[in-house]
Every structure is written in C-alpha cells, then in structure tokens.
Image 1 (cartoon, rainbow, N blue to C red):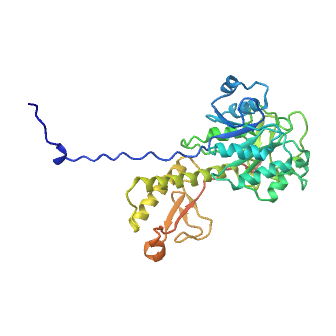
Image 2 (image 1 turned 120 degrees about the horizontal axis):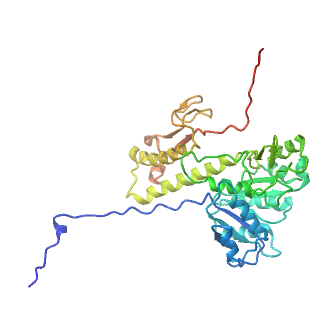
Image 3 (image 1 turned 90 degrees about the horizontal axis):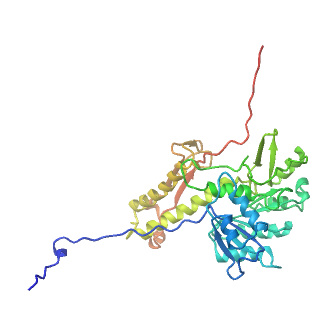
Length: 376
C-alpha cells in the first residue's frame, strides 16, 4: 500500500507573493499623424507602424502625403520606435478627425494633421488639445505669409494671445509638414537613458530645406516669426542648419513641457503602483515616508537623465521649510505637512497630508555672449 504523506505545510508554510505588474507608462515617444488615405478604414481610424516600409507594404504609396510625413519622422539622427497613422475622411473637419483618433487611441503625445489648414482650424484643434487627458501637444506647419508680419489674424499671434501651452508650430514654405522633422527627433529622444534630456534648439530637420536656402529671410521677418512663438528652420553662417528656437505657443520651451508632463505621469503611476502593491499605507509618518520614497525614486530618475539639476539654488517662493535662495543639493526637495496637523475630516477620508515636490531644472544654454579683449 503506497504511503500517503502528511502535508509539509503543517511544519513549513511558504507564502509566495508575486508583485503586481506596474502600470504601463504613457507613450511620450509616440506621434499620431492624421491625413486622407485609402488604406486605413474610418471605422478602424488608426494603425501603428514601425517604419515607412511597413506603411508601403500596407498600401501607402511613396507619393502620398502621409508616407512623406512619416519619412520626416523616421529620417532624423534620433527617430521614434513607431508612429500612429490616422484617417481623415474626405470632407471631414480636421478637428473631428483629431477627436476621433484620440477616442480610438489616447496613448500618443503629439498629434499632427497632414492637410492644408487655415489658421482658424489650427486654433480650433489647439483649443481641444489644451483640455484633453492624458496631456498631449498639437504640432502644425504653416506657410501663411501673415506669420512673417505678426498680423493679428496670423496663427502664431492668435495662439500666443490665447496663451496656449500645448501647441508647437513651424513656419515653412519649403515643406508642408516640415515640423515633423524635429518632432521625430523629440520622440526618438524620449529613451529614458542617462543624460538623454534634450532641447529642440538648432536640431536638423532631415528632408527639409531651410527657409533661407534659396530665398532671403530677413532678420526682421525672423524676429517677427519667432516673436509670435512660431519656430523656423534656418541656416546660420552658411554652415549650420537648425530649428529655432524650440518654443510652444505661449513661449514655454517644448522640452520643459514634455518632461514635466512625463514627470507628472510617472509620479502618479508610481504612487498608484504603491497603493496596489501594499496591504496598507499607514495613516502616520511612516506611511508618508513610504509615499515620499516612491516620489524620490522618480526624482532621481529625472536627475539621471539630466532634466533635474545635480544641485541648484531655489529661486521660487517659500514652501514650508524651503526658502528663496536655499540650495537644493540634489536638485529637488520633497516635503510634507505634519501628520499631527491633519484635520480629523481628512484622516477619516484617508487623505494623506499634502506633499510638496520642488524641482530645480538643469535648464539649457541656447544663447551665448563672449567678450574678447585684444591688446597689442
């Protein structure tokens, strides 16, 4: 008769806890280009492609506008791992196509419509992008001559006056979708690797001619274009082709927006991962410390990629114990209000005390003055 063993669990009980998978981070390296095509049906609306070769195999001709736009995205020194291509139905308003693509897939960070757009259509889409969640950016290209004179009805002036932060534009008479050259660089740079932080200033747009390559662009015109926070691709000194200056419609630097958006996203998901992975975050200082530890991990990550400074002087307003002029040795400081100061209502509602994260950005230099004194 075979032996029927007693269970070992009575003596040695092993409990295996497999940690849950962290939430997927939003794709800050993904651009969605939308245009008229006969490949992607309207009911499907968007498709993901890893290369223009895949687009050609799927039925896009090399002469189609969407194919050429994708070439710009994939042709730079840094290129995105993949792109989304969306359908603009014949006769459909650009804003409606943008919304439809957003509803089908909201992972993309930059949206772009490959069509000859009027200023009012761009403004309409920009207004929509300002309010969507998750955070995104609208890119556009314009050849409207009114941009060079900073006319009140030019797209740059209208977006600037509305203080829209989530729109980035380029004036170009050389390529209808010129800005995708630098957007490809931006998406390809979101690798998370050490020192991978970047700026858009002076980056090359492979496949695009500079605005002054065959015709004159006066300094006055350049200053008016960029004065309305519209970017332009120009040649300097006959040697250097570059995108300038790299600003959004309200004057914010593009790189600062995308990295602060990503910081917010990463911090939010990091805390959600914590809430899902532990049985309980104690409603006392040890619990607050757990939360701060997770935020610290994110801050350290952004210091590693070069977005947060190694150290720096705080030039903002006073926040709890942080005072104007204090030095942040690590480029950031995380503080919280004392647990003992919480109201009973907040404790009953299981709200943590407010937590304050102060970041000192590493910034960037794009304009340099050098004095040379010569004596003989």
